[in-house]
Image 1 (cartoon, rainbow, N blue to C red):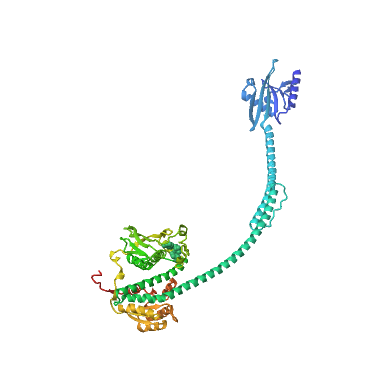
Image 2: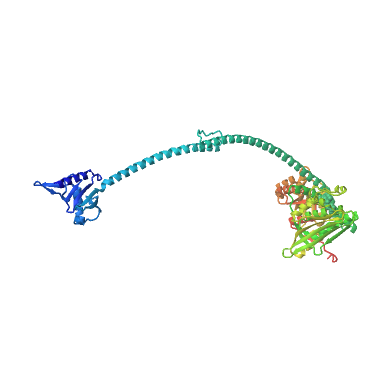
Length: 623
Ligand code: ADP
């Protein structure tokens, strides 16, 4: 009995143990009988007043019963459990954990301490913990989100305000300020921004003011410049007009001199000396004409309108002509003149005769002008001849034993209006010759060079590359040497309309001996009437005439149905390109500059009337 009492005490003790929520602890004998249990039952029962031990498998407590069954099923016999066991098993699909601990002592006790506990007991706690963790995490997230949003707003709001102010600033609203009552970095930034805005506003106001002032000044200056340009244009026009008029005034008497000299040269009754004299008159007249043209060139050079017009040139004849002209001048001055053309000088080359002559005239003129004793040498050398391309590189050299030029003066002589040396000599020139020559040579891809020693003399030279003209050697002889005495075919009628008798007579005297029927009219009006009456093959019309001038004449002429196709050659001493173009615009077929060159006139007649010339038979000695 003592023993039973003790067992129930152990049971009471076990009941005080907290095994999870629904877990049980019980003690088994190896026979499977309960010794004590934490379940709410006694480990014994009474049968016929006899106390009987309760087997664990018969326990009313389902967990104890199921655990005992599981242990028996697992080990077959409880004696087999010798060591501590940790097991688990299912009851109705729910996991239960079992801990079995064998207990033995030297007094004979051999028990098994079994603790069984459903997984749900501690999982519930764990799940409760998990739920709590989730709730706390979610709470932390919400709090951090709220804090984050507030923080972001706290930082971004002022930045957005700054941005809005900067945008307004960029749009020109300089009075826009950022209101930010903060002492941190953003507050300082806003203050800096505001002070920058104030400074910028001031700077812009100042800039705007300066700009306005500048605009006014530019406007004023533009107006002044416009006025200055108008004045300069007017002055330039006046200069051009003056030059044109001057050249016209000088060309008109020259036309007479040169025209009649050419007629005189054709006369068969002249002696050799008279013919030479006529030739000298012609050359001097031509030189004068060249000088007039040079004055015109000046205005062209200044306006940058000078162009080269290369044409076929019989070089030996051309150079001979230039040399002869200066030979006379040298002779008159009592100095020697040496002309040294190269022996292999090309016959016909392509060059702008007028410009080449202009340069040579200037250099030779200077050489003679600045040489009082000794000599002037004019030499032409062939530096190089490229057979394939037919290009000749020629060196033109003018050397004198004259006054020479000092080294510092040499630097200035190519500048316009620069004259150095003796004052007496300066009166003769203008100081433009070398400047013009240098510019012309630049157009020919060449450059004028000089070597000089004061008191010893000077040497000027330039190299030019010139193309050989024509391909056949036959053309090498100058055509001028052939004298035209007439033309084949029917007689042609030429009407000359010019208010000046001498001009009309020059043309008549040039053309009548060749078999042309030359008719004259002294005014535009009478010219139209005569043209209708005689129906000429060709009309030569002077452009500068009182009342009806040449332009009006040409316009009226082209209005006459029967005269629309008649060839009309405009002629004038005013050789400005604008005048020439104007004459073409009103119906001229060609332009003939005055003083009239007979060769050019005949060329024009041949071209427009399709003439075949008859030449004078050469005597055997001439050939
Ligand atoms: P100018 O009309 O005065 O001759 P240029 O332009 O032809 O003008 O020449 C400019 C200056 O160069 C001349 O005034 C002269 O002092 C100097 N000069 C040119 N050629 C010679 C020369 N052959 N000998 C000495 N001085 C020369």
